[in-house]
Amino acid sequence: MRHWTLLGEAPIPGTGQTLSLYQGKDDFFIKISGGGELMNTRKHGSEDALGSLPCKRLRHPEAARVLIGGLGMGFTLAAVLRVVGPGAEVTVAELIPEVVDWNRGPLGERSGHPLNDPRTRVHVGDVVKLLRKKNACFDVIALDVDNGPEGLTTSTNDWLYSEPGIIAAHNALGPGGILAYWSAGQDQAFHDRLRRCGFMVEEIMVHAHGHKGARHTIWLASVDG
Ligand SMILES: C[S@@+](CC[C@H](N)C(=O)[O-])C[C@H]1O[C@@H](n2cnc3c(N)ncnc32)[C@H](O)[C@@H]1O
Image 1 (cartoon, rainbow, N blue to C red):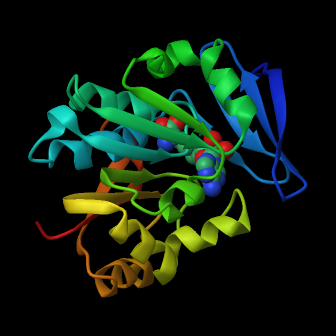
Image 2 (cartoon, rainbow, N blue to C red):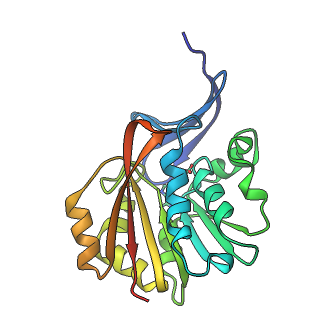
């Protein structure tokens, strides 16, 4: 039987639910009260891909401006930092302050402490606020705030998958920019919505871990340019 130690708990704003961080013998996991496991440190192949795939497609990754929502266990952030160059600026928005604290603590070692990288900027708050900002301009926006287009963390995240949210993201991207979404499963209606909002869309299936087991979906939605 596995023994898990509860390391921390945090309220999820506006939901009455709690996010909990547990540590086991070899790994950590984050769970939502009344729901399942949100993620663990053992399987992060698709979280890595969410960061690396769009950045590798950029013409000038060396000075890319990237927005990530949210931080989670820091794997997407770490993957972005591995691809972009020294002139890049990578903003990570995380709704729950305790998640940032956990990554600054023992959890951060699993992703290589990407919060300590000088190219990282942390926004403690809703990624929606950064997307709605006038004059926002990014080369990549990588979103993994939920299980997919069907919200899990907070229902206000639904906006990120709606036409107004997708159009706001489109407006926040420069020429040739890429909007990337992570999802636990496929969703043809969402794929079509991205296209209706003016993106060229590529859907990529990525294993959660290595070359076996569950596969997750990553949409890469590109702006002309
Ligand atoms: C599945 S985890 C992200 C995993 C991340 N890709 C990684 O590599 O570890 C989802 C994260 O998004 C955060 N989150 C949820 N809604 C958010 C929002 N609207 N703005 C910013 N962060 C949000 C959650 O608190 C959680 O930390």
